[in-house]
Image (cartoon, rainbow, N blue to C red; front, side):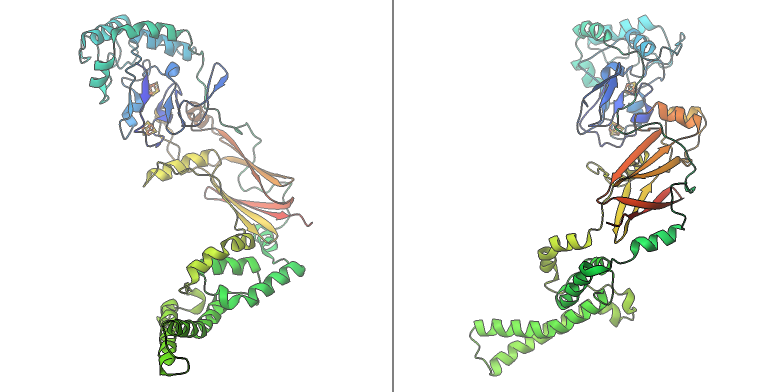
Length: 477
Ligand code: SF4
Ligand code: SF4
């Protein structure tokens, strides 16, 4: 039986590097066979290409994917029973360079045995509805063995033979756009194309506030709206402060203070309005009561918002929270805030189906494709932070070659052209390239092209602790 992955799969990717035939692919990633690309067999979960699966016959005594799967969702395909003879033939076709001697590892014999006997027995046992523990036959140690046996009819042997004709002659990796062999260069080493300034100096240039009429008008608008914008939460206010780039026009502390003062007028007026609406007579003791309620609300609110200051936190470190109407106001001005702040974007890291510690595995895999990065939009440039992989994923090949689990630094190169910046990464160590060569989730080379909104000028990069930082200046327009 070829192995299949059920929809219990949690996309942890543990199985993928284990497969000796690279038969396992991430959901929504094309697979390749005979040099031809094919649409993914599953959009949501990891999947196995049946014609590349040998149930690990020739390599292991049991299905490697089933062994590592944390939710036991790699099971024999009840629709596709296959004999040991057929599976070892498939392994020979897939690995023409490998010699499979007698006694090859096999789940049928638990470490080698008579091919034909095992194959025959497998079919015979199925016919008999046996549990698969017949002579010389050991059924895959996956939990689904019993239902599979029950469901696997004898006549399935014929389609198996027909399927053999479509085997491909080599093991192929997952198809992922943009993976190319790239030029090399030491991480963090300054290239000819870079600016002759320190990284910090280029960051300072990129962070320098824009001058000119637009910038001044923006600052003045923020200044005038400070008593109102001060009602927002600390985060949005800090974003506005960064976008305005001039604390004389707008800063978190002053805007909050202005809003607190503003609310000592606004709340009593609103309370008086409520009182009048409920029948209180103006300029009497009635409306004074309502005004007093407004003052008390404003006082309590300001004590809550500034409570960190009351406990002795320095003003600059205080979290200046929102007023009572700060949240709805935030929703109202959100589109404006987005235009004003334009805080940048990041590389896509799908999280669906991931939780707890497994999320980190997913993120690590995305790092191997150069897909984990953030972009910060600065007044005069962009700052990009791209994370490189930290761990060599566990695999039988890694263990066989005696490679540890710490990922060495990639050879990296950065280039800027037009409005895009390209980062290329390449694994140098030959042994490691061998490990990556057997796993479709481990490209030995990656290329990430990031398109930005404006034509770009000079740049500077630095690299440390698996983090590549690039600051690139916008071209003056
Ligand atoms: S690990 Fe073994 S059983 Fe699983 S897909 Fe690959 S060849 Fe098939
Ligand atoms: S090991 Fe993980 S990715 Fe592979 S089938 Fe099991 S749950 Fe899915």
